[in-house]
Image 1 (cartoon, one colour):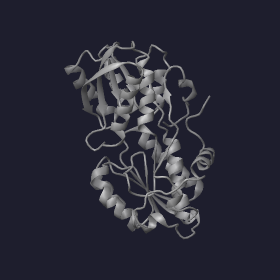
Image 2: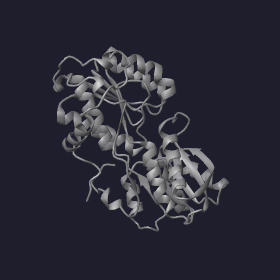
Image 3: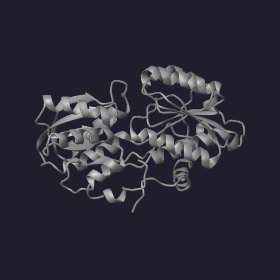
Image 4: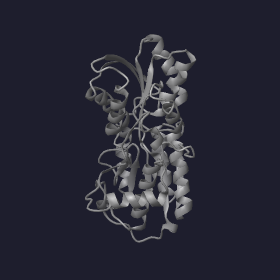
Length: 337
């Protein structure tokens, strides 16, 4: 069985070999982003982690993995949850500076509104992003290739329809602040359908903020206005699982469900029910690989082992589409996500 959650040492070694050879120039937002830090032992290192929210398993898994890495490697971890509020996240960033953070890792909430202030912070300490980045700010951004992952899932979902068929789709999205990740996932998924020969009309789009509990009322409203939906697309597995709950409660076995990204364990369990299951596909967006790589970079920057110029502006984790035919390769019953 192919394990989705790799050990920190193995994942770091693989990703170091891929990213550390011949890479050039990360973005330059100030002297701290372009110069190597003074040599510092990892056990004297303080790394800040600004998480956007914790109401989806993907985000809480990142926190748990970061804490495990801190315990294993010996650095001090400062963790803050902004609960989806960009103003709170910016305040937390300033607090981390005052607490002596040597490096800050950020999962950005609102790239548009946070850009200026995070760029200023990146002038003072090395700053990098995980999952949701801000172009031209900080050292690098570690995430899945959201467009590619979405497209792979879309191609797999298309197999459940007839080539040339025109289907009606409802989309559960991440809300108004989700201007980079969500749109890339959605467009990628739709491009995958098109590539596979399936036509579509997106007849409804509703905010669910990547949370399963918020997806339930959002789906109920969507179905009330559009009872003949062929497919509900969640831009992550948590929202798609919320949609599936509603369909099950309503006895609706016709409308299919898919996610453009994540690979959450509970979603994979639904896909494992078979190639006629109502939950069709998702895309691999591993919190383990992203967290391990982001904190490997943070340690390298904080200790002075590497400088910002050693990294590309974006680093992408493994991209894969997951459906009934390959789900066993990615399912791990012991995974926390």
